[in-house]
Image (cartoon, rainbow, N blue to C red; front, side, top):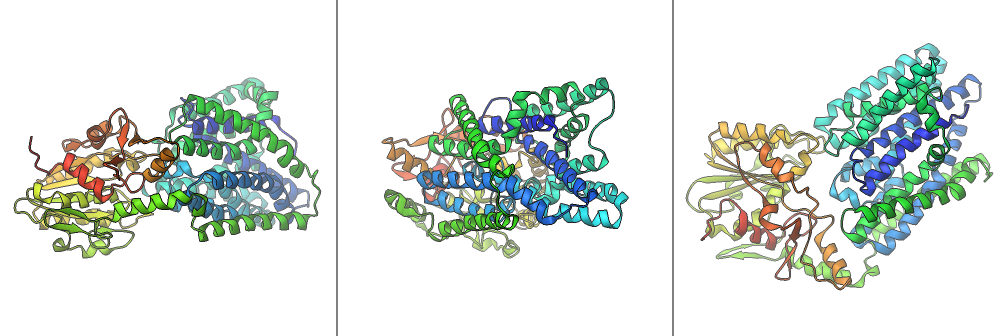
Length: 632
């Protein structure tokens, strides 16, 4: 296949927005679309290579995988090693154990599945996972399993049907991605079935011909339009943009058109220039380098990267990428390191197996807590606080019972169908009936309601489900029972003659689907004749508060508050979406200038990065929970 320098230049357009987006450079809010451009490029190049091999009678699965392993494995193993060393030195046990789990996933090329199951790309938890970016490699590797076989079968069976077969696969994958935007957004982002259409755009372009024969002027006009599509996506999209789905069509189409017009356009000539080609050549190493560096900067500073951090991340990523491209990538890719095919493939598979085995060892060792002797003591103290009894008047709530797991708070099952009001009354006072409805960010108020029961008029019931915000239209493949759970809330409201419904949840999860989903639920509740109160998003931190406290104490600081990762205007937008409901803003009530307390009177207010401890629950319920009677 003839070398096309403008495709290397297009890799630059793919990798730099990703780098700038993750480093926190202002304006690149949609930089994540660079991965979609990479997918189109990969689909195009892989299909051209396979097509050339089939046409020239040199097709071989082993040869194909030898090329892929030379291209992918050496640099990947190099960065895994560097990342593991840094994680060992920096990460406290819970984070190192999580890192070890991701090692297992990376070693088996299933990291996209792992991160789908245990985090979202834009969630807080993802920001401290240094191997998160390997999800895209896993998608490509999974694509490489099917594509050579599909190409060979279609070549043998019906050469002319290939375009139609791949076009049908593309259409089905795109349709699934559009559908999954609302029902399974996290799976949609991470998994091959909803991403393969992006790779197949490149495949179809490769099979169709690959390069335009139109005039220079026409090609330039098309390529400029394509560049505008990409730039619009990079600068206009945000983490709240429903993605991939239809939104990904713009950058993918732009990438395909730039490949199609090739060097016969003004855009192609710019991309074929030296600086663009060079960055494109190191783009794989740059992609591998930048995210772990960003994560460790965030972990050390415990804050989002600022301008100075961004410059350091970019410089360090470029320097490391140049070195690894020169001394690791290039020797293997150009076969300067000349190993027999079987030895190379065997070594690659063995390397990834060792990566997985190291992961299993880290899991078995529970994150190697002996690395930080003082941490165990801190954790024990924190756990004593979380499991401590919460006493108020004559009420005592024991550890494990504070949320009434499996009785009033449910996780991934249909236990909610057996919900009984007599088991879930948080207060037993006379008066009107109220219902606390939501996910775990509603359940964490339950201990505080019990602790402040004497100050609450009426009877309050708890009805909560992990990962299911109190939105009637909410659907999730990860939590398939959410809709049934939420619909049952209406039955409870009617059967108990509930007068007030308190809605609380991890509202930030609604951003990508649309906050207006809440307004529809509020309207339906008001149609039932109930008063609706929405408790806005409570503070969330970049990581667990015990880690913040430990790291600050180790640095000789005694900080009792830290910056929340919730956008300063998020609760204002949520208030607008709540329509005519009464609204309580926990961040406005509890924080000042974006700094939120996480310790009070020497005790933790949270037991992770956002859920209230029993002590914290009692404190905030007394302060701002809407049903509490307060003496002025």
